[in-house]
Image 1 (cartoon, protein in one colour):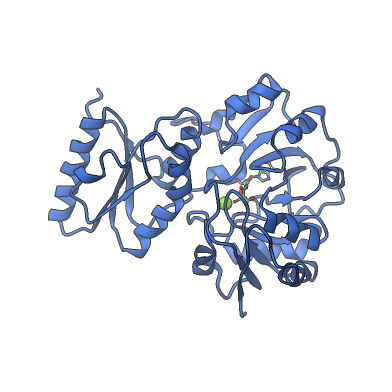
Image 2 (cartoon, rainbow, N blue to C red):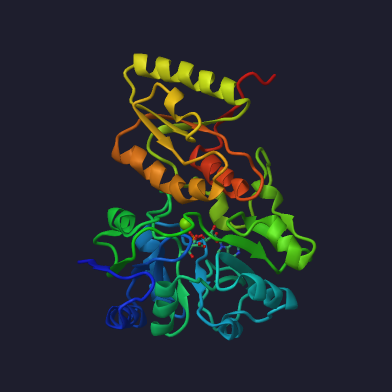
Length: 351
Ligand code: TXA
Ligand code: MG
């Protein structure tokens, strides 16, 4: 299949290009498009065969449900059988934006789209291209992140091309996304709302508007409970090199990583480090990638997936990453980094 690759302005998308992409979706085809979090791989949410094609193009297990994207709050009633007050409260505070809500599914929505579950994940993105495309497609676009299953999510059109060229009908390239990490997922079908995937909208922000909010116990490091979002149980985002996260006192972290780098280089391995500006000059690695100033969590969120992909392009075989503080957006960053590392974390100097 030939994949059409079209540049599109992120603030004022060309209506003709949007109409063409919308037609593809209505006819059962697949289009990768930008959102404010990461790129999505869209298909018509009400077309079961589109959803099957999404799983196939990504190489994703079909028990891992898709998020349904809407562009008007009221459309939520077409896909959810019950919309609790909490959903309205959250929508007022955070939609359109980087938040996904889990609600009971309406029977009209094909079970292929929700991976056989009786709940549905709903998101109302704020990116102008996403909003225009969803509208042009008829209002309901099922879209996982636009990466091959297991790889880091895509944060630019070029990443989508890398993973999906020849496998989908069209890629809309609006440049780099703003946030760089996928949306926060909150389950509203539980007695107390529960975060199933941390993201840009933090627990503190959710608590301000909802009161009580918990985090899925399956997300805690070392937990033996299964995460409740099916996608959180898979190994994900992994670069091809072996990645280790190092947590602790900054001086100890730097000297620990340098000692391991020296060993790896002596063994003829190509080495990389993920760190921040404060320590970037201290490492003896082939590739040193800084996420920006240590205090700048937004910059770390924005660059993490790109950095993981860069290591693959540059054939890095051994990677060490400094850990991030877990408050605020740091929690979402560490969640992705630990998944990329297969939960391989060390604490130098800690007994
Ligand atoms: O920011 C985002 O959310 C991006 C953009 C494209 O919108 N989308 C995204 O989709 O990250 P995906 O498919 O890569 O991740 C969706 C996650 C998966 O972990 C999936 O298991 C979970 O949401 N999920 C979807 N429906 C669910 C449901 N009904 N119950 C629990 N988890 C669900
Ligand atoms: Mg994904």
